[in-house]
Length: 303
Length: 259
Image 1 (spheres, each protein chain N blue to C red):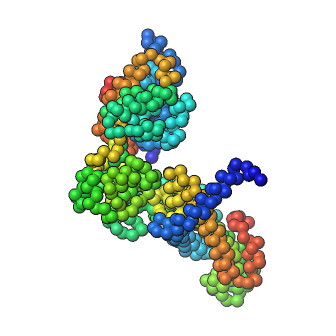
Image 2 (spheres, chains in turn purple, green):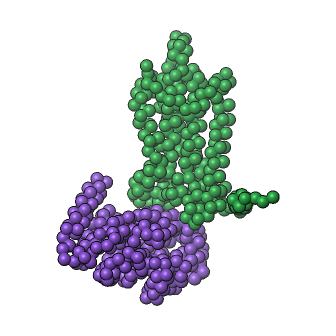
Image 3 (cartoon, one colour):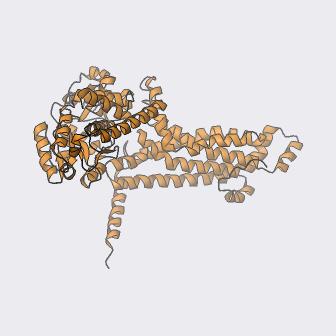
């Protein structure tokens, strides 16, 4: 616990110093960086904080004035904050956001992204380029369960109808991409459903403890690899494409020239699923700080 | 006659709640099973706390030793929010459970019962201990001296003199503790326990206000029934002549250090 605080304090001091350095250091191109402070927000889980830090620090390193407001709540809270100007920039997921905004998402990354761009442009939000990395709902079993029932794809679960317990977030029975889709698209029938948490420690503990057979985690969660779980392949393509994508208020974006959007696009292009999983694992299991992880990643990539 | 719009909505909502109660009583996820799970969790927490706090409080109260220190320690359970205790104990219990083979009842994966039990046990201790200690201690010293003079042993004094005289206060402590535990038990749903809290937590997740309201109502009814149960217990256990004053001593007593 103390180590965490020390790292946090150290990280905060470094960020403060970086801010001061950025403010003092940008000589000739400070004209490009004059504009309103960019407020970077995030929803309430680890990956969101890491991604938020990556974009916030990339902007700071390039000389922009940045403020961060992380872990604000679920999308139901942060999305309205983006629309009414309390935050300017956040990192989202193409398919899920499109569905949230009333559109129809598909498994096609490019198509879903294009639909999202059009949908949000009308609402004053610019959707930047999407990253190769995706994070979607993943149905997971332990290695032992996979071996016992010969499971590698979600459709393999149909052979065990009536035998297995599914665990996931309490809203799973009411979600198309969760239990409703598993029953409707895959024809699955679970023995029972255990309400746990949103792909978090309760789900992991329930899988390890044998209280559930199939759990819902997120595909970029590092714990899947770390625990040797088997992520069942979504062979009937129930989950839509969910590429990482930065979204920003058009009003704020317009205050700057194209180098801002270029920078955001460049950073997004470098984020892969493998790298994101590794960052998530180090955050969730090794208890490293989001800002330190982001700093290291950006340094590696030359931002 | 024109009703204001809000009243119409409220009546509709209450109607939905009544319908909910007719539809959700049965099965593993129905409120009958979940009420029993809540009673089980709360009951075990209160019982364990009582088995520790009553003897301890009685002994310390009788011998008038270490009282202030003991009350201070026990009051840590009052100061720490139950939510915090559940959150802190969860990873520890999960780690312990990972070393225990699967299928062992209660421990299981470390979720549900155990972290909630620890938090509720910590919550139940202070009122029971404080009231027992103070109740025994505040028994008229003259009466105790007289008993000693009659040749009663310390143990007999505690059992036959101090105990009955302090019983109204002790049972009040049990009552207060029990109601607090029942009312706080919905927190267990946050660590996947399948008690009445499930309706409240799941209701929030799926934005089902009727479910939230019904769950909260069930918990409130259970808390009231708990209060009534201890009222009956008081009638059975507390000696007749003391019952009237028992009502006056119904509030939890505040510990004052010995003058």
